[in-house]
Image 1 (cartoon, protein in one colour):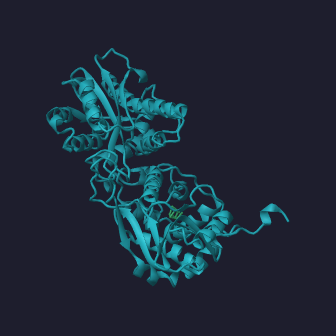
Image 2 (cartoon, rainbow, N blue to C red):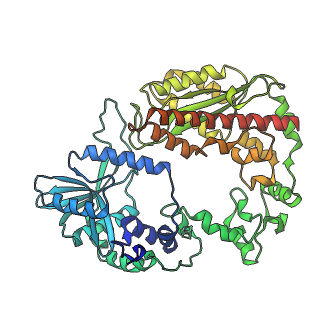
Image 3 (cartoon, rainbow, N blue to C red):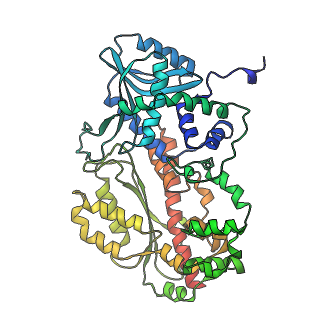
Length: 499
Ligand code: SF4
């Protein structure tokens, strides 16, 4: 028998059922052409899952690299061992569907099932998720007398000293899961043929299911088909009106260059359309005089922050942003040429005093006068204001407000009067540098292409198993990445002033 003809032990997993309930095409793609995604939210979930295993105490832990057959056998033996009170990642297989239960805890003469979610509230999708787990576990002979979702207590404020006693909140969903129980076999029957190798891809149009309840990772792939209809799709307009796109699509018009200007109401949209129609860069004349009028020295500033389910600093809650890196480029005169290594930086992954240290070093780096350019400044402003609300930093309120008053948003400047067709509707720094002379090369950032990647780097660097050389490598990448953002802003302001 050829190896590829060996029947698979299972065709569905809990994740695939949930995927298929969102969109049949998504399930098909998961099975046949999966995208390997590395998202920071996975790291948040994993770290919270690790915390939950310490919270529920010692037990038989089947997490790790156990294959399905070994995990199922180990589960059976743990279930039959009266000395084992808790099983983590118990494995059950029924009707071609494999599930791994986060926590199974003995409860009198039956079991309590707990699914761990790193969200701050109970969601409908959690109930579907637990229903699949419970159905398969029950079919495998497990008697469940309680089913719960363990999620983050949004009101929990970490007081320090490792006291996380109230971080987890449990929601009893036994009744809701029991109500779903009859539906699960129907879900499985409907989804199994789609997840079977050799099935043809379901023909499904994009719609609300692409973002609800989860952001589908295949959106780029599915929208590529739509984009083939136009070289410059109307959808590139920032905050494009969906009705506008659909109305023109009904008339067979997909290209922004072919719609009447009178249908566009925002000056920025008109500017973008005009730039694409003439295939030229659009630069409003007033921007040059504005760029020349800024006083010296000029600073360019960027932050990286991380969010997590298990707060680290005393006085913070889950998902409070922890600023762990800043980069500053200081520009002293028009003839000074700056390079990526000319910047200043701060980078620390964890220290009980790092919120205060972050602010103090930043205040010292930007001095007391001169504009501070920031791209999409609402992010940095909000992080600064959140920091001075903490008791450890409250005395820095006045100098931090003075710093905030000096901030000028390069995103506002760009939206006000700059556009190049190569930006394809995006005002991110990564797209702006495509349109101006620059030494910034984001492809040299080696795996870091945005704030989400910087958060992943933070999680990797705070993993106790990371080697020192790997950590150093990530530190260098982070420093380079953040400094490229500040240099990109310098290049942008310089370009406008010299144009
Ligand atoms: S992008 Fe939308 S249509 Fe495409 S697979 Fe995902 S959910 Fe389905």
